[in-house]
Length: 258
Figure 1 (cartoon, helix red, strand yellow):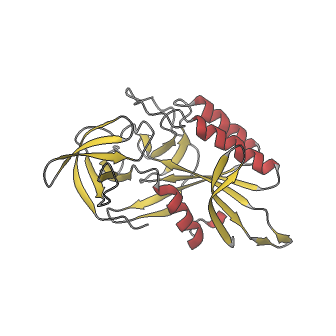
Figure 2 (cartoon, helix red, strand yellow):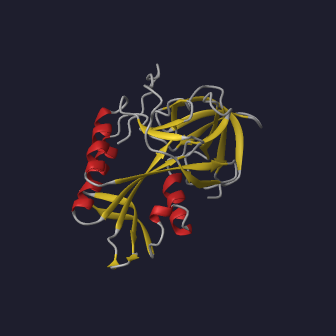
Figure 3 (cartoon, rainbow, N blue to C red):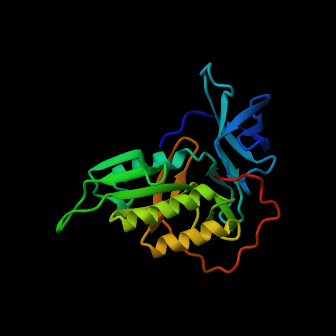
């Protein structure tokens, strides 16, 4: 996925969930839109380098949008992280169409935002795949953005309470029981070597994940290759952490995913 031209600056503060004040490297201070409803734990420290896009649309209230941050998680040096939760769906669709995600390859049709379940929309609905004995069931794919890292190399989700995310897991389980295939795809918009559910931050989501997997929901986790001009879905990483307990951060932020 190609990114628009970006300008650089330093974060002053992120506030009211969707706003961020940034001191541009070129000149001046701007307020940028922050497309992220979560806590952004570890990504909102004042002074971190950030990248913004600029829009010339006169209908927009804010011309600038926060896209990337550079953070040192104490693992592989400073690295780029995408904070935009709008990216993963596009990245997932691009990767599925290109056959990059092997377990999701071979489907003839990919549709986005299809209504299903209890007044929900599935991120990707894959259909038209044949097996040795004939047509295979449709595949319902829910996509989640991941950018939390509290311990070096370990990506986690969620970064705050997400009642909506737990609801999606229940609905994916319902699809499996209805005879379909259901997949929870986590898109890690940074470098990482393994992935785990942050059940200490949202016990209900952790319980919902356990139930969903027991019902047959599949879990796939892919990291991204990051650059200031493009992001692409790359290799899969393991789901599961064997590195011992993670201590909750002192400041968990105020975001709540719904």
